[in-house]
View 1: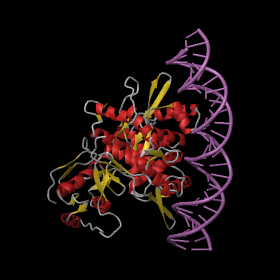
View 2 (view 1 turned 60 degrees about the vertical axis):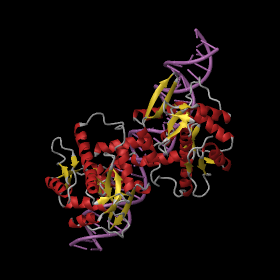
View 3 (view 1 turned 180 degrees about the vertical axis):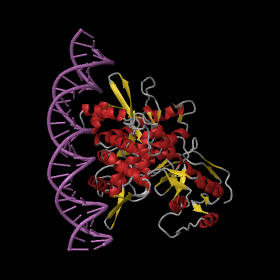
Amino acid sequence: MDDNAESLAGWAALLADRTRASFCLALLDGRAWTVGELARHAGVAVSTASEHADRLVAGGLLIQRKQGRHRYLQLASAETATLIETVATAGPPVPPAPVVSLSAAHRRRNLAHARTCYDHLAGHIGVSIADALFNSGLVSRTNGLVVTSRGNAWLTSLGIGLDKSGKRPVVRECLDWTERRSHLAGQVGAALCRHAFDAGWIVRIGSGRAVKVTDAGARALADQLGIIAVATDSPGAARAVPAGARRP
Amino acid sequence: MDDNAESLAGWAALLADRTRASFCLALLDGRAWTVGELARHAGVAVSTASEHADRLVAGGLLIQRKQGRHRYLQLASAETATLIETVATAGPPVPPAPVVSLSAAHRRRNLAHARTCYDHLAGHIGVSIADALFNSGLVSRTNGLVVTSRGNAWLTSLGIGLDKSGKRPVVRECLDWTERRSHLAGQVGAALCRHAFDAGWIVRIGSGRAVKVTDAGARALADQLGIIAVATDSPGAARAVPAGARRP
DNA sequence: CGCCGACTTCGGTGGGCGCCGAACCGTCGC
DNA sequence: GCGACGGTTCGGCGCCCACCGAAGTCGGCG
């Protein structure tokens, strides 16, 4: 029991610091962040962030990849991510926060429904969009992940152009941590997200990652992709049903 | 992001202390311990233990029940137990613990083989029992999880009665963290575990959660459920094979 | 080659907290 | 009533560690 307790405590200690917790939560988006980004995100000095990164890597929670003068950090594995989410969303506990809760639960539901993951869409809505693009043959994954010619035409019709020679992958799958399925990242994911904002399909809820589908957005998604979506904050709503995809 | 990090950190902080971790691990056996017992178990002064108990209760990890001059502590819920197990058995073994291993590995094998989870049986043996009950039609999950009439008869033959009107679910599935499959909890899981202790089918190994199947227990399990089990500590043993279930 | 920028290392500071023993408080049993 | 006993409260000690700024390192770019 003795060494076991040590082990459990050591594990938990990694997460038991506000700054490190903030890192892990940020890294839940699956991306690799640099030390500087993490420092800015958590609001601490770069030197401090560097030391925390050391500890997290040493503890096995994160892995690092050095690239030029950057040091990229990401979660060690999907299991790690699951673990962090488990603890983070665990029970009502927590020392601070005596009441709140109602709005907290509401916020969580919003997050699960629609949010940004870095620069693309995630949550139920993100997964639904990915499904719709696959089902309607705009994106195909039979031979790796590619945008079909029909897909290109559709994107062009939205005013979106892709940079095939660029460094960034045109389209990429990104595991969604609330849905446990893929949504789309890469140039396509980012462009669609940007377009959704620009066209007023979605708006941010507050300052976090959560977004809300507007009425106009719901209509547009139905028209374009056959997705039935409702505004996140209407009562009993948090739901988006991918219908049999229609030709865009 | 901010309050979320705080929350995660606060949660983890509860587990991030050697002594508190030791408490929680001890309490995983589902029993209620007194402050004094926990203090002795962890090797700290009673005053120290008392303060730790305060924190764990305040944090919602434990609940307490005062009785005379004793203060009994136990895990707040089965979910809490699951959470602790998740973190405890999680990923990379942790910062410390360089070698140790042989006895540690042995102990872990014991744990994986048969242990208590809160108040019911877990590990390979727990999963085997669940399998046997499903296969022999004593418990069915075709229409939700229910004890069949034959199942009820069998339980009665063991001297186990169920409280159908009670608050606690009659039978519940509980994910086993070493097997990654379900074992049985709820009233049935608890009653079977209690019966196994009472009838001498299993005995505790030391003071922890690990249990060992006795020779008599192995015979009984084979007779009753067609499970082939061997005592945990016989060499190369840690194994329990669910055979084609026989009528009990 | 020299500058810039990302990151690391290092010394120093402060606060938090884990620990204890001593004093205190309630309950139990005589 | 008194003593024994389980538990709590309190003051104090010491360590650990999160934080910072300044100096140093190293890769990339002009």
